[in-house]
Length: 325
Length: 123
Image 1 (spheres, each protein chain N blue to C red):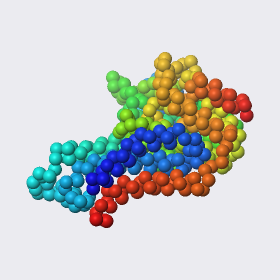
Image 2 (image 1 turned 90 degrees about the horizontal axis):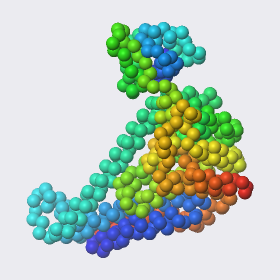
Image 3 (image 1 turned 180 degrees about the vertical axis):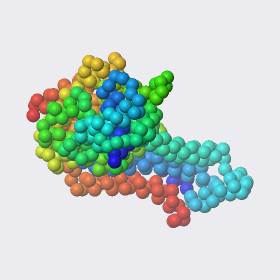
Image 4 (image 1 turned 120 degrees about the vertical axis):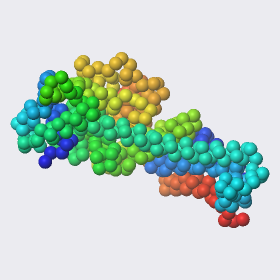
């Protein structure tokens, strides 16, 4: 089991740092956003699994030759007060760290879920009072506001797409359709679940390059996936037109005329955030204006196979010693 | 039968539309007058109106004047202020915002807007 813990630790380091950096710099994800999305999920899952696994396997090493036997040994030590002379201080430390990290990840996931749901509910309550249902489009509401803005608020059966009348005034019928298809793609492809998981991953381990890069990449990839859905129904120029209007038209802090201005600086995002959000718009526009062919089947297959391998390796390393020895 | 949510909307519309505080009775009468095309217009029990008002009070949208009997209700702040608050939530870039709601286009910085215009111009 000893070599397994070393291998898992190496994998954890690779997945926490060089692998996400390489993937975030790669050009191909914009050609096949779906494949890239799978790979990011595999990196995050396998990364977490190998972090926990490395410490677990290393800490359990004196207690047995494989995971099952060792866990049984641990049970004996903890519950049946069997002497634990083989278990050194470092092993106890590794085991505690493994369980703390597991608990931390699970709790962050739950807390993030609760926070997001609470914010959505509050937003929906207010929205219900301030918006009126669109006459022409189902599960779409219109809010009176001059800033051109469109967004979707996920919430199961109550998911809703919100348009401002400022936006409706600026866009043609087709462009509006493009925006609606784009937003509905977010909802139907359940992008909010990905956003939730990666937001939690980032708040759990904010200092790891992988969690920050993954969240940024996922935010960008879901927009590309929704764009791809939109160009299936409207032509590319229409979508580009819609993006152009919203991106350049909404520029500047014009939150609602003279009477309802925001406190100064309220719309100044911190520079890093700003870069992330707006670069993704440039990337989106560029891939629509200069479409590149998607990955070849072989390339896609290798990326997906890598994802599968990433998930299998830590799992097998955790379980396998009991199977083969 | 109108849902509570629709009633809340109509009541808020009435309160936003007037500057004055209204009693549940006045509100009920105004609701019975059927504002154009809404689900109301049917006679509602005053207790229903009171239920709606207390829900709105709990949500912090309505305040109650307790020094008179019957109590009078008024909107805490204007419709415009609430809309501004809502838009603020949508437009301000916060680390978690993307997870709460997905905007069609995120915030665009000045330099980014220039890049976008260049891209669009060259096409």
